[in-house]
Image 1: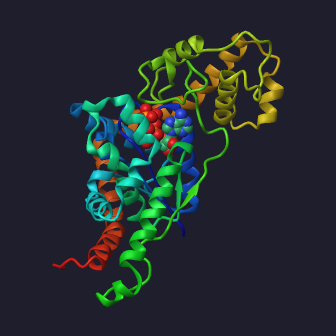
Image 2 (image 1 turned 120 degrees about the vertical axis):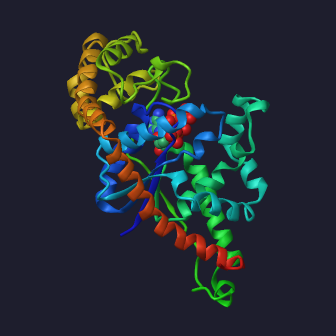
Image 3 (image 1 turned 120 degrees about the horizontal axis):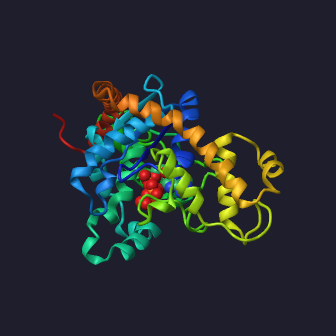
Length: 342
Ligand code: AQP
């Protein structure tokens, strides 16, 4: 079976964008591939973070994975920092990653500009190397990535090829290794179209955990009245009818797309159903569909959170399974780089 890895950062509340763009798609992937879904807590400290919140958020994100249908008998579900190999391999990869490759990363440029000099730690520059480590440790074939992460995946591929060339093959064999590639070079798994969920208050920017206003996103755990209120107040326009493909109407496209994905209808079905609706009617329809979709997830979440030992066990088993695979890769790289083995 091909291997797939992916994760969400425990940096706040998981929102509809994380769900529709990532977690919901993983549920189908776990039946097709050998999957590793982790909570990327080490990435969550890239920008200044709240220490008291991190572990709570990590637990909650793990419970959300399970509540959304990720199944621990199919996928390895674990916390990134529980598998030490991630940080170790990152250091080894850093030595072979030219700093120019990292300086080029658009997200670094954007996030460092926004954060201001005082808040820009070295980790903001080097975190794509940690991401490369996350992926390469598992010899992943496919990585589901949003548009915003394609540059980082390309970097991962470049790092893999460079380390394979520098230390793999015959050189590794001479040091007692198996020879061949140290890393599989992974491919991107592009998510289904329409999976980029935009802000409720601005149809041109993505729904995001870090946006200051909570009104801009639907959190997966938002209670019913909050969802009603957020959809009631979300940005719309004053044109008649509803349509997907008018570039002047990004909010309209976004809300219709959300409706389409959570109801599982086709675009054509949604067009027929909604094209003549006014905003008031559509907002009620969308709110009802959201509540109907999220309510069972929220109920399962409460159940999972009420049994801490179950969650601990899932994470422990997940970390053990993941470590077995990760340690093989890590040990190979140590060997190929010439480290004295214990
Ligand atoms: N708006 C979105 N639409 C579709 N997919 C999205 N993802 C995030 N936002 C959207 C996908 O969720 C996964 C996990 O993301 P992350 O935790 O690494 O955070 P992020 O990509 O930085 O986005 P966030 O959650 O909104 O945080 P901030 O505020 O930091 O930008 C990824 O697969 C991502 O593509």
